[in-house]
Length: 436
Image 1 (cartoon, rainbow, N blue to C red):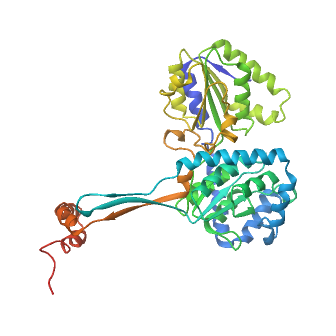
Image 2: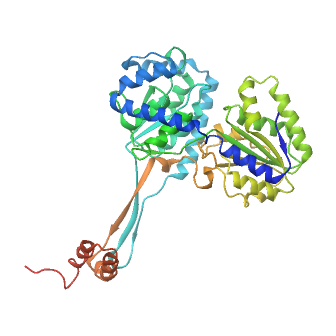
Image 3: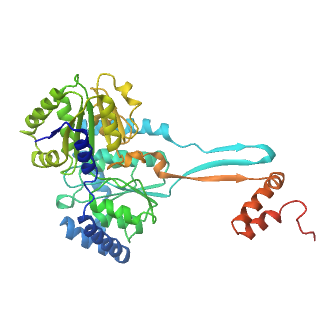
């Protein structure tokens, strides 16, 4: 049963509990396991990958089966319907069109005394994408991760994903990867796949940045290898917070809550509303829509543990609670969503109006659906083209400019106790140069 809360203090406590749902003592045990996996793959390479794939995924592979073959890639196109292929291609076009607007631009500024300053953006040499398997296939995740890398002009994009039954990879995932420009695909998942991307093995090349969501073992592995390589974020279980007023349709709101809950038993689905009648109607509608739900057991667990309805006295209070929770997805199912938008400070993606369910953003709108979770929207943003790029500062001083700034530079260097810093400037300035 989806709980209804009317006290704001209790609501804040519950939202804090939900936000911290992956912070528990069991994480320490899992982290020890992940450390062992990382070190073993680093030392043993492919041998460790094959061992862990058999242990965790119950699939026995040979080294030559790690990489998905060209014939399997070709066959994937024959195994998806024309309608699915058309949808993948449409989504790819939409995602590419949006992310092309986000490409950072290099710039150079010419100042006084021939001072040149600037910033130069370049892509990483190689990117690694993690695409989860298990409960479902995620061609949309492939597109959302690979297309920004392609737009950033990353020369080589490598993808890893767990093998399914009979060592197969879902054909829709393989088609999406090819449509998005992935260079190589490997059938390996879990912490061992992250280790392979970070350190390289005989078969899988090491990369410079790793992106893509996964289970707790994947997330911990990304946390532990950060610094060896870059990562996008530490993605936790998915979440939605819906702010709704009396004009919201309870059928739509219930469907949107369930659309989040069906992801994972740890997924969070929260409604904050100013209307107590809507709260009761949504509660009843969630129960009704769950009756014949294909993923009922999983979805009911999420709703029971991390589902919540909060009744508040105003939309301003709703916005305040939302900002404290900093949701991955925020839906504003209210009459004037743009009026409330200025009060929203923290959210990964914001969906405005009753005709914009989260599924629009998950698949087709264009903005990235790889978003900060567990309160990270307070300081983090969606995956984008810039995730696959880095920037270098450009600095050029003329002798005239250096002479003008020499005094201040030397004073600061001396204040920090770094005499050679001061000398490197002094020896270049007029009156301090040694003559032959």
